[in-house]
Image (cartoon, rainbow, N blue to C red; front, side, top):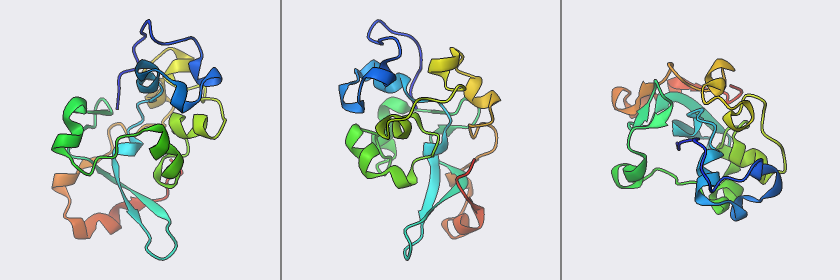
Length: 156
C-alpha cells in the first residue's frame, strides 16, 4: 500500500471530481486508506464464487504499519500480487474490501470519515478499527492446508 502524503500533484477532494482513470499517480496512491485488507490472503468458493478473507497476510506485509515492506518491488518478489489499476478495480471488486476507497470511488460513493484524506490523519483508519493492524499472521508461518481454518467474513 502506498503513502498518503500530500503532493503538488494532488488536487483537493480529487476523489469527488475525478474517475479512477483520471487520477494522477500521486492521487491514485493517496486514495489508499492503509487498511491492509487487500494484502490478506483470500480463498474463493469454487461453487458460488464467494470470497473468504483469512487473517494471513502476504509475506511482504508489515503488520505494524499496514504497508507493504517492499512496495516498489512487490510484483517481482510476489508475482501473484495484484497491482490495482482502474480496470482491476472494476473487474475484481468481489475480492476487494467493502470499505476500500478504490471500490467506493468506482461505485460512485464518497470516502468514509475515517479515511486519511478526510480526517487528515494516516492513523485514523487504525483508530476506527478498519485496518488489520496488529492481528495478521505472515503467510510463511501458515501451511496452505490450514488457510481454510483461518477464514472469516469480510465484514470487518
